[in-house]
Length: 553
Image 1 (cartoon, rainbow, N blue to C red):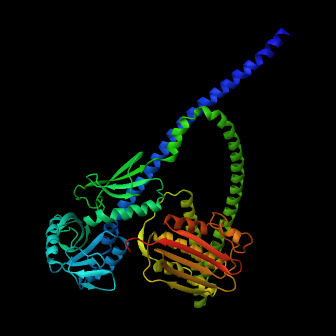
Image 2 (image 1 turned 90 degrees about the vertical axis):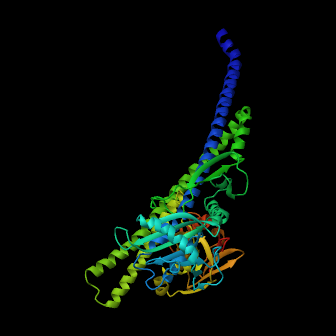
Image 3 (image 1 turned 60 degrees about the horizontal axis):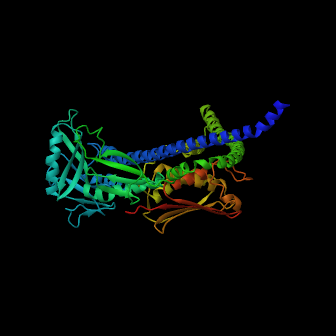
């Protein structure tokens, strides 16, 4: 009895001690968790800043090397300037449209003289030494001759040609302005002893300092989701060249260096030592870090928060479990649908191939019809594969877009050509209304994939009135593209859901992977644009894309 009585009396003490120990344990674990989370938040912020710095440096290097690695090698000694140097106007115009930094191209063939060197200037940004006038064709290129400037270039390039270099790269002051000059040297012989021709370009380093890096940094910040980050470009004297947004660096700062070369130094082995500029990405006043600091002062409240956290955790766990089950079901349905979508064109192509291989079709017109069907099914298969590859990038975005200035008309016409056979077979009437000269800064392949998905949906869900309208215009400083069909339409409640991955409108007869509009939304978002959808059941659907027009256009 005494033993039982002692246990009864001691029970409150033991319970109190147990509760105190529990409180102390929870408090200690809470404190350690706050410190750990604070450190983790700092590491995450530092990693995010590092990834953005790497992305910006990679974009700068790729763009700066574009003309030397893509444009200059496109011409060969025996294929340009056969009668006059003006044959390179097409190449210069294309380069001016894609890359903003070349101010002039120049070229000669044979034994050079100051009078034989032809300069091809930007029509909208002439060199400081340029006079008014000049020959301007249908391209934004002014063909000029500058004997005094040509003499300086010939003398300097001759030094590298004498050593048999494939490229001549140097910096030179022309008319008081610093320039970087990159020239491809073409030889008559394999020993590279007899110079046949030269084709190069000039880069105004003063303009580069004032405009180029600011525009490129803004583009990368918009596409790379740099919210909460400050991006800076500094020259070799640590002077700020570009800032997005224009604020001061504070907090965590990540720095990366890059050479100011408008060519690939791996290819140009004799390049001089470059001035190293730098990219700095800062995380200033990050709310996550601030919350971590404040949380460390509230460690004693962790006991009360623990109960709420446990309840919330249980609810979140149940919701996560239910969501995971739904996602598994959706993905299972997606795999089944995609398998069917893949097998259908493959089976068609195989059946036609077997028929043709066995010689069962002797009529030439029938063979042409079978060939067109193979092309149509292969395009359908290719579009599905492109969507699957795009979906993998949506799940884990690790690929950087290759941006260039492209005209909206070119992209739309290229996308429409891929559906010519379907338009003809299904008797579609396509109306196209595009405003002339509507440039955007975008990834050409991504834009084509985006339009392919929109047009494919318009074909799939068209009703008896098989009419598709494609409209492009400039509106409030943006390029607006509209694709309108007169088909079955989308219920109002489903409009907000159709841009989700795997989602398909219930009750629709047409099959699909459920990825098309999700990929459209992501591509447009990555390019700094917006997507809106208007639809009425039985009346049709309009997909409206708004993309920014480059500031310097």
